[in-house]
Image (cartoon, rainbow, N blue to C red; front, side, top):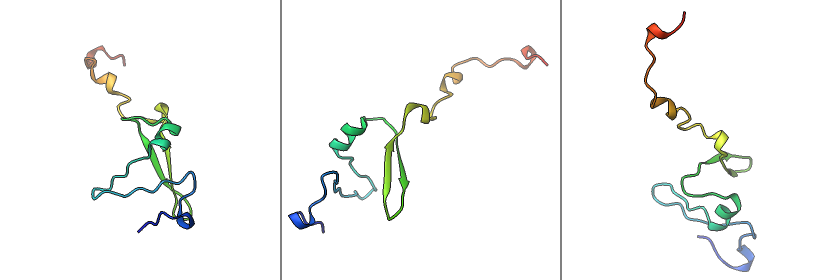
Length: 84
């Protein structure tokens, strides 16, 4: 159990959270504000050295999910119209 006394208090930039049964963790408001993370944004998690997890907000250029969705709205081009 985590003890909240001065001797064991987290550092200023440290936040302690509980993992839910389905593996979810709430990102503290202070961190979301600093990283400008909003609902629907993508974040990346990497494992670092010494049992550390590195989290960073994905920039739109790094997010390739749905990048070709605009092509799905186009009508297909018949093979006969393609030049050889």
